[in-house]
Image (tube, rainbow, N blue to C red):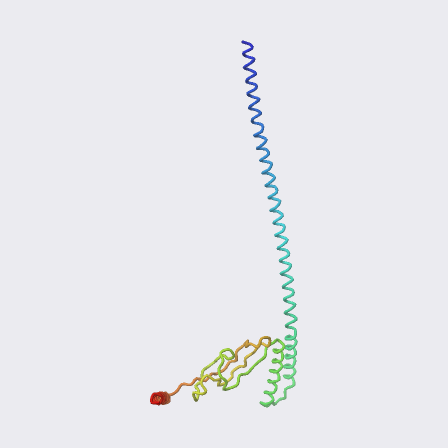
Length: 215
Protein backbone atom coordinates (compact mmCIF):
# COMPACT_ATOMS: atom_id res chain seq x y z
CA UNK A 1 0.00 0.00 0.00
CA UNK A 2 2.86 2.23 0.75
CA UNK A 3 4.28 1.77 -2.72
CA UNK A 4 0.94 2.58 -4.22
CA UNK A 5 0.66 5.74 -2.16
CA UNK A 6 4.14 6.85 -3.10
CA UNK A 7 3.36 6.29 -6.74
CA UNK A 8 0.20 8.37 -6.46
CA UNK A 9 2.09 11.19 -4.76
CA UNK A 10 4.74 11.18 -7.45
CA UNK A 11 2.11 11.33 -10.17
CA UNK A 12 0.38 14.28 -8.45
CA UNK A 13 3.65 16.15 -8.15
CA UNK A 14 4.35 15.65 -11.81
CA UNK A 15 0.89 16.98 -12.71
CA UNK A 16 1.47 20.14 -10.60
CA UNK A 17 4.87 20.71 -12.19
CA UNK A 18 3.39 20.27 -15.63
CA UNK A 19 0.66 22.79 -14.85
CA UNK A 20 3.28 25.22 -13.55
CA UNK A 21 5.38 24.74 -16.66
CA UNK A 22 2.41 25.38 -18.92
CA UNK A 23 1.47 28.62 -17.05
CA UNK A 24 4.94 30.15 -17.07
CA UNK A 25 5.22 30.75 -20.84
CA UNK A 26 1.78 32.49 -20.86
CA UNK A 27 2.92 34.93 -18.18
CA UNK A 28 6.09 35.64 -20.06
CA UNK A 29 4.16 36.25 -23.26
CA UNK A 30 1.79 38.63 -21.49
CA UNK A 31 4.74 40.44 -19.96
CA UNK A 32 6.46 40.69 -23.35
CA UNK A 33 3.25 41.95 -24.99
CA UNK A 34 2.83 44.53 -22.25
CA UNK A 35 6.43 45.64 -22.65
CA UNK A 36 5.97 46.02 -26.40
CA UNK A 37 2.75 48.00 -25.85
CA UNK A 38 4.49 50.29 -23.38
CA UNK A 39 7.32 50.77 -25.87
CA UNK A 40 4.90 51.59 -28.71
CA UNK A 41 2.99 54.06 -26.53
CA UNK A 42 6.25 55.63 -25.42
CA UNK A 43 7.49 56.01 -28.98
CA UNK A 44 4.11 57.38 -30.05
CA UNK A 45 4.24 59.95 -27.27
CA UNK A 46 7.76 60.91 -28.33
CA UNK A 47 6.64 61.32 -31.95
CA UNK A 48 3.67 63.44 -30.88
CA UNK A 49 5.93 65.68 -28.81
CA UNK A 50 8.33 65.99 -31.76
CA UNK A 51 5.39 66.81 -34.06
CA UNK A 52 4.20 69.54 -31.69
CA UNK A 53 7.73 70.91 -31.50
CA UNK A 54 7.99 71.00 -35.30
CA UNK A 55 4.56 72.63 -35.56
CA UNK A 56 5.57 75.28 -33.03
CA UNK A 57 8.79 75.89 -34.96
CA UNK A 58 6.81 76.27 -38.20
CA UNK A 59 4.47 78.74 -36.51
CA UNK A 60 7.43 80.79 -35.34
CA UNK A 61 8.91 80.78 -38.86
CA UNK A 62 5.55 81.80 -40.35
CA UNK A 63 5.20 84.63 -37.83
CA UNK A 64 8.71 85.83 -38.63
CA UNK A 65 8.04 85.70 -42.38
CA UNK A 66 4.74 87.54 -41.93
CA UNK A 67 6.47 90.25 -39.91
CA UNK A 68 9.17 90.52 -42.56
CA UNK A 69 6.61 90.77 -45.35
CA UNK A 70 4.70 93.47 -43.46
CA UNK A 71 7.91 95.38 -42.87
CA UNK A 72 8.85 95.15 -46.54
CA UNK A 73 5.34 96.13 -47.62
CA UNK A 74 5.33 99.19 -45.38
CA UNK A 75 8.81 100.09 -46.61
CA UNK A 76 7.77 99.65 -50.24
CA UNK A 77 4.70 101.79 -49.71
CA UNK A 78 6.87 104.44 -48.14
CA UNK A 79 9.21 104.40 -51.14
CA UNK A 80 6.29 104.61 -53.58
CA UNK A 81 4.46 107.31 -51.67
CA UNK A 82 7.49 109.43 -50.88
CA UNK A 83 7.37 111.39 -54.19
CA UNK A 84 3.63 111.97 -53.75
CA UNK A 85 4.11 113.13 -50.18
CA UNK A 86 6.85 115.49 -51.32
CA UNK A 87 4.63 116.91 -54.08
CA UNK A 88 1.73 117.42 -51.68
CA UNK A 89 4.01 119.13 -49.20
CA UNK A 90 5.27 121.46 -51.92
CA UNK A 91 1.70 122.14 -53.06
CA UNK A 92 0.67 123.04 -49.53
CA UNK A 93 3.67 125.35 -49.22
CA UNK A 94 2.79 127.06 -52.51
CA UNK A 95 -0.83 127.50 -51.47
CA UNK A 96 0.11 129.11 -48.18
CA UNK A 97 2.69 131.36 -49.84
CA UNK A 98 0.22 132.49 -52.50
CA UNK A 99 -2.45 133.18 -49.89
CA UNK A 100 -0.08 135.41 -47.93
CA UNK A 101 1.03 137.34 -51.03
CA UNK A 102 -2.35 137.82 -52.72
CA UNK A 103 -3.12 141.41 -53.67
CA UNK A 104 -6.04 143.18 -52.08
CA UNK A 105 -7.91 143.23 -55.38
CA UNK A 106 -7.68 140.05 -57.42
CA UNK A 107 -9.12 139.87 -60.91
CA UNK A 108 -10.91 136.84 -62.29
CA UNK A 109 -8.08 136.12 -64.72
CA UNK A 110 -5.56 136.12 -61.88
CA UNK A 111 -7.70 133.67 -59.92
CA UNK A 112 -7.99 131.41 -62.97
CA UNK A 113 -4.25 131.44 -63.56
CA UNK A 114 -3.55 130.75 -59.89
CA UNK A 115 -5.92 127.79 -59.71
CA UNK A 116 -4.68 126.40 -63.01
CA UNK A 117 -1.11 126.47 -61.72
CA UNK A 118 -2.17 124.46 -58.68
CA UNK A 119 -4.06 122.02 -60.92
CA UNK A 120 -0.93 121.59 -63.05
CA UNK A 121 1.15 120.85 -59.95
CA UNK A 122 -1.38 118.21 -58.92
CA UNK A 123 -1.39 116.76 -62.44
CA UNK A 124 2.39 116.34 -62.35
CA UNK A 125 2.10 114.55 -59.01
CA UNK A 126 -0.52 112.20 -60.49
CA UNK A 127 1.67 111.46 -63.48
CA UNK A 128 4.49 110.47 -61.15
CA UNK A 129 2.04 107.94 -59.71
CA UNK A 130 1.22 106.59 -63.18
CA UNK A 131 -2.13 108.34 -63.63
CA UNK A 132 -2.74 110.73 -66.53
CA UNK A 133 -5.84 112.91 -66.86
CA UNK A 134 -7.73 113.07 -70.15
CA UNK A 135 -10.58 115.31 -71.25
CA UNK A 136 -13.07 114.14 -73.90
CA UNK A 137 -13.90 116.45 -76.77
CA UNK A 138 -17.37 117.92 -77.01
CA UNK A 139 -19.22 116.20 -79.83
CA UNK A 140 -17.25 112.97 -79.55
CA UNK A 141 -19.14 109.70 -79.58
CA UNK A 142 -20.08 108.44 -76.13
CA UNK A 143 -17.91 105.51 -75.03
CA UNK A 144 -19.02 103.46 -71.99
CA UNK A 145 -15.41 102.46 -71.48
CA UNK A 146 -14.14 106.06 -71.23
CA UNK A 147 -17.21 108.08 -70.25
CA UNK A 148 -19.82 108.00 -67.51
CA UNK A 149 -23.10 109.70 -68.32
CA UNK A 150 -24.16 112.05 -65.54
CA UNK A 151 -27.26 113.27 -67.33
CA UNK A 152 -28.95 112.97 -70.72
CA UNK A 153 -29.79 116.15 -72.65
CA UNK A 154 -31.88 116.59 -75.77
CA UNK A 155 -30.01 116.61 -79.07
CA UNK A 156 -30.88 119.19 -81.72
CA UNK A 157 -30.54 116.70 -84.57
CA UNK A 158 -30.28 112.99 -85.19
CA UNK A 159 -26.58 113.37 -86.00
CA UNK A 160 -25.91 114.48 -82.43
CA UNK A 161 -27.53 111.41 -80.91
CA UNK A 162 -25.12 109.60 -78.58
CA UNK A 163 -22.49 112.35 -78.51
CA UNK A 164 -20.87 114.21 -75.63
CA UNK A 165 -22.65 117.50 -74.95
CA UNK A 166 -20.48 118.72 -72.07
CA UNK A 167 -17.61 117.46 -69.94
CA UNK A 168 -18.28 117.69 -66.22
CA UNK A 169 -15.05 116.12 -64.95
CA UNK A 170 -11.91 114.76 -66.57
CA UNK A 171 -11.14 111.06 -66.63
CA UNK A 172 -7.88 109.34 -65.75
CA UNK A 173 -5.85 106.76 -67.63
CA UNK A 174 -3.32 104.31 -66.17
CA UNK A 175 0.02 104.96 -67.86
CA UNK A 176 1.22 101.41 -67.20
CA UNK A 177 -1.41 99.71 -69.38
CA UNK A 178 -3.09 102.69 -71.11
CA UNK A 179 -6.45 101.68 -69.64
CA UNK A 180 -9.04 104.06 -68.25
CA UNK A 181 -8.97 103.89 -64.46
CA UNK A 182 -11.58 106.62 -63.90
CA UNK A 183 -14.19 107.43 -66.52
CA UNK A 184 -14.81 111.06 -67.44
CA UNK A 185 -18.16 112.47 -66.31
CA UNK A 186 -20.13 113.86 -69.24
CA UNK A 187 -23.55 114.97 -70.42
CA UNK A 188 -24.83 112.86 -73.32
CA UNK A 189 -27.13 114.02 -76.11
CA UNK A 190 -30.17 111.93 -76.95
CA UNK A 191 -32.23 112.52 -80.10
CA UNK A 192 -35.99 112.26 -79.65
CA UNK A 193 -37.81 113.24 -82.85
CA UNK A 194 -41.12 115.08 -82.65
CA UNK A 195 -44.33 113.55 -83.99
CA UNK A 196 -44.09 115.49 -87.25
CA UNK A 197 -40.48 114.48 -87.74
CA UNK A 198 -41.31 110.87 -86.94
CA UNK A 199 -44.18 110.91 -89.46
CA UNK A 200 -41.93 112.49 -92.08
CA UNK A 201 -39.25 109.88 -91.52
CA UNK A 202 -41.82 107.10 -91.77
CA UNK A 203 -43.21 108.48 -95.06
CA UNK A 204 -39.71 108.82 -96.44
CA UNK A 205 -39.05 105.19 -95.62
CA UNK A 206 -42.31 104.16 -97.28
CA UNK A 207 -41.51 106.13 -100.44
CA UNK A 208 -38.05 104.61 -100.56
CA UNK A 209 -39.53 101.14 -100.20
CA UNK A 210 -42.12 101.75 -102.96
CA UNK A 211 -39.42 103.06 -105.26
CA UNK A 212 -37.34 99.95 -104.77
CA UNK A 213 -40.35 97.74 -105.46
CA UNK A 214 -41.12 99.56 -108.74
CA UNK A 215 -37.59 99.01 -109.93
